[in-house]
Amino acid sequence: MKKTITILLFACFSAAMITSCSKDPLAPVPIQNIGDNAGHPATEIASPVTPPDPVLGHISAAVTLTGKWQLVRDSVSSSNGGGQPGANYTGTAADTYEFTADGKLYIQEKGLADTANYTINTDRSITVNYLVYNGVPVVYGSYVTSFSQVGLTGNHVTLVTSIAGTLSVDTRYVELKR
Image 1 (tube, rainbow, N blue to C red):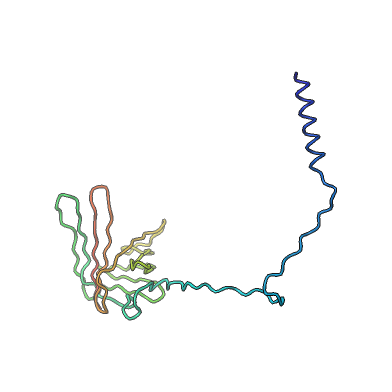
Image 2 (cartoon, one colour):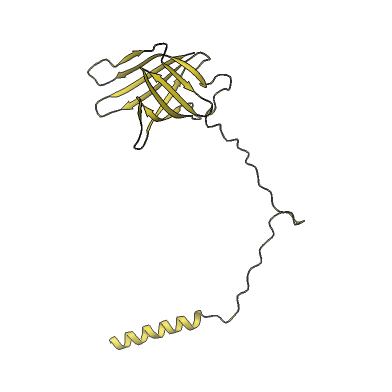
């Protein structure tokens, strides 16, 4: 029985090898001319979609965050069910947020200097990727937060972010003025 199976396998393998071989020479397929019928090369097709500016997004160019802002207040409230109050810091003359046109954010708050890259997204949220946070360089990974804008005018804006923890939801409010 073993000998019969071996002979059948050999016969099948030999038949497959013989029938799969071709004696017809293969000719290369000519490359089709891409372009018009006159032989001119194709031109790139411009996208009809205008890419958003990575800094301004869909915010009116008349009112933007670009420039130096004075910190009015930076506060955190916690909704932990215990009713414990959050922190509230009132800004001084030395506390500023400076948003540059090339996507950099420089923060001076409580005597500490922070540096970050920022992007204003199409939904008007602001993604902030800190390079230096609370005066300490961010070494491992990154510290990213996303703020929502509330009431952006030419001279006032409030940035709001919420962080959900295991015991509470902390909401941070950063109120700025020009």
